[in-house]
Image (cartoon, rainbow, N blue to C red; front, side):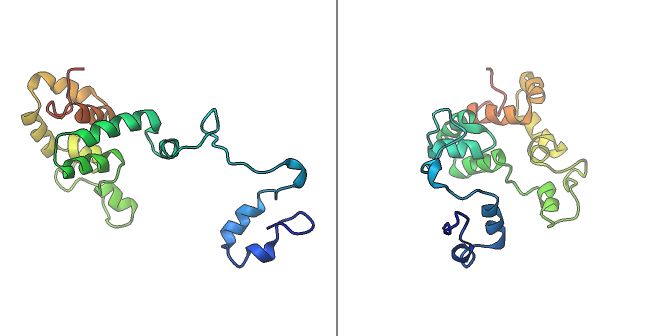
Length: 172
């Protein structure tokens, strides 16, 4: 893909690639004989070795360590598959709340349509909405409500995976 002068051979590249891709290639110097051969490297690991697990961790929000830990717990939960899938959607921010609908231009208001109080985010929909709150007040023992309120949403979700019976407010 390099011409006789050592530059990119645009006549061979342009029929197959988009203008955007060609512009990205133009920003990269073409390979040169004196520089040695190219070899793939993984910049996020000290030993430069690539694994699919590390790639997923680098691309995911929670990173490799936390991600592997919670995934193992999540998929071993003794609950129906649809509950595990629900947790997966929540952890990845994929529930279609009004906040997301507005972001994708599918709806005109971020407000919670159930309580009409605040933006309907994922946390609001399953923890902060007054209707959801009433459900949690029934399910969570009164002695654990203060812990329920004090945990960050992410930690509350992790606790929920770890302590299914404790509804996210375990003893640890």
